[in-house]
Length: 111
Image (cartoon, rainbow, N blue to C red; front, side, top):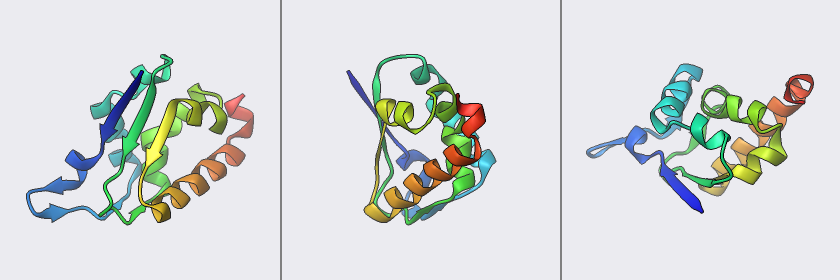
C-alpha cells in the first residue's frame, strides 16, 4: 500500500507561495504534523509530494523532516525503500545530495 503526503499545505496560503524550505525547526514541525514517525515503523511506502513552485529545500529543513527516518531506517537504502520524494528535478538533486552528506556524516550512527 502507498500513502501520498503533500507539502502543499505548508508551502501555500491563498495566492502566497513558499519557494524555499529552510530551517531544522520548521522541518521538525512538518514532520510532527505529518506524523512521519509512524511510517518509519511500518512497511507502507510513502510518497512525499513537494510542489513544483518549491525551488529549494535546505539540508537543515530536510534533516529536521527526515533525519530521524534516515537513522531509524538504517540509511539511504532503507529510507528509499520507505519514502519516495516527488519533486522537480533540481530539488530532487538537492535532496539526494543532502541524503548522501547526512549518511557520510552519520555513518557510525546509522548502523
